[in-house]
Length: 161
Image (cartoon, rainbow, N blue to C red; front, side):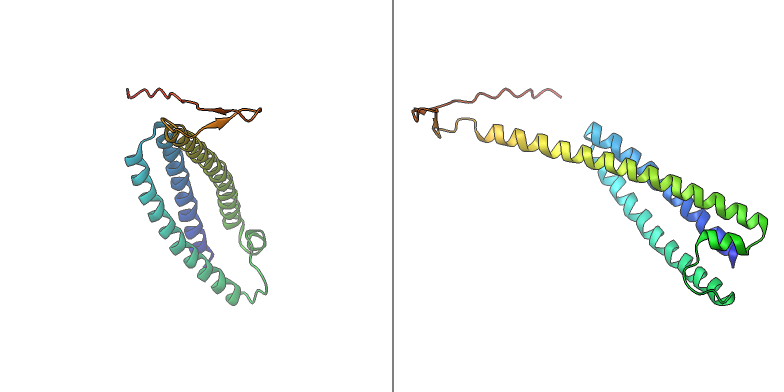
């Protein structure tokens, strides 16, 4: 059973690494404003998420079986499992745990950077839309003295790509 768990954890570690690579590609696509690439990456992320859910279910099932076989009460953590298995399995489990924690930290960092890029992009679009909506707007503005002042906003747009 432990070997089966190790196999599943190895697959999860590889899956998380591939998800990190997708996030890094997503970051480049965001910077380059490549909508088609973003769509492809989003689809691949959905696939990875489905795989992750499937592996999580398998892992939970194997952990439950290990708990029943060994009459373990409460949570079965890797640390607790390492104490129960032979040395070679313990080394593999420890290495997998460390790899998963490391890639998880990198995923969180990259995901947060991508979210920041998206927010900056939304702010930029909002400012541009506001500026464009004010072009030719006859709405008067008032000075501190209450005198009506018509303002004209000129916007220059560089259409070159």
